[in-house]
Length: 65
Image 1 (cartoon, rainbow, N blue to C red):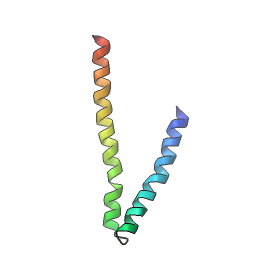
Image 2 (image 1 turned 90 degrees about the horizontal axis):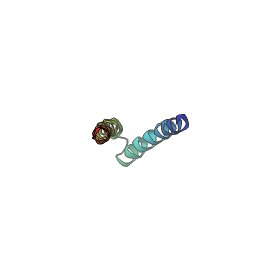
Image 3 (image 1 turned 45 degrees about the horizontal axis):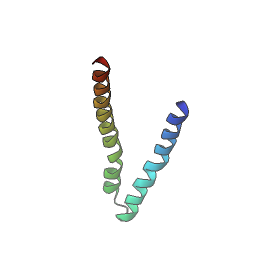
């Protein structure tokens, strides 16, 4: 499990700067676009947490029934 967590952290640390750099390159090094591109990742994290919460809630209800 810890290896998967470390792999996910390494992937995130290399993927996010790459994506932001690509966006900066496409939009003539406009830093506002880069910040907007980097703000997508925390939003995706929050959405994933909310979805996981509902999935876990449904599993708990199924176990209790």
